[in-house]
Length: 102
Image (cartoon, rainbow, N blue to C red):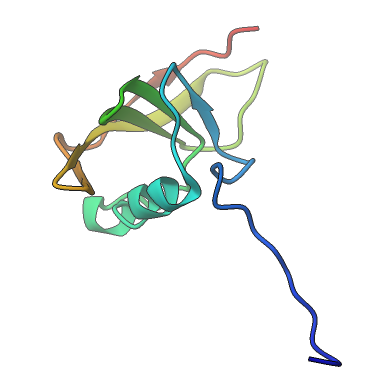
């Protein structure tokens, strides 16, 4: 249709601002579903990273403040699993130190 533009988004991988590591991959839809859990869990920070521990299990990390190489970093972490095709938390979020490794 003339006059209309298309803005694309990829459903092949997660948001590039969210670091996903591990042998197993996540789709953009998986990440969005996990993000929807944040308010339910009382987490007000965005997801910084997701570490895949298996095809249906992941640890989610939300930084408390912007990442710093000089100062101690703190993160909120929780574990999610995929049950019946949906991501659900298996523990309450916990707050603790986070180390930057190069």
